[in-house]
Length: 191
Image (cartoon, rainbow, N blue to C red; front, side, top):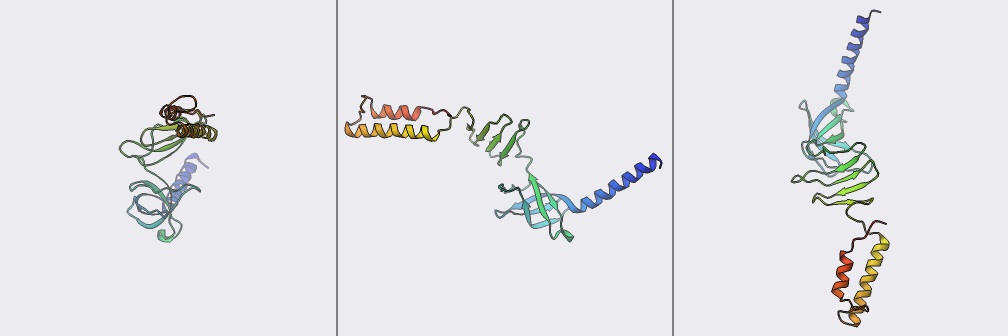
C-alpha cells in the first residue's frame, strides 16, 4: 500500500472515532448543584440536562458552583441515561500547586480559600480561608497531642485547686493569673 493511502485511511478512522465519541462525551456547565449529588447543566451545544447525577470518587462529595465545567457521559439514547463525570471551576482552582502535590480546595471568598495540601515531602497543611495554616508535620502552628493536653490540664487543675485552698496563690507562691497565663501562652510542640 502506498503511504498516502495509509495516511488517508488513518485520517478517516480518526474523524469517524471523533464523531462517535462526540456523541458519547460532551462538555457542559453546571447551572445548579443540589445537595443530593444531582445537578442541572447545559451542554456547550445547547443541550439541557436536568437531574444529572454527578459521579464522584468514593469518600469525596462536592457541590460545584454554578459555571463549573463538567464532562457529560451519554449512556442512553437522547441523553436519557447521562451522568456528569469530573468537574472543575477554573476560577477557584489554585494556580500555585507544587509538583507532586495533591490539594483539596473550596470556593474562593474575597480572595481567600480553604484548602488541605498534601505535599510531596509528606507535609500536610490545613489552610483556613482566614490565612492561618496548621502544618501536621512540624510547621509554624503546633498541634497539641493527647499527653501534652493532659499535662497542661493537670497543671491548670493543680493551680485551680491551690487557688481554692489559698485564694489567688498556689503552693509555689505564684498567682493563679500568672499560672494560667503561662499555661495558655505556652506552645506545645508536635512530639
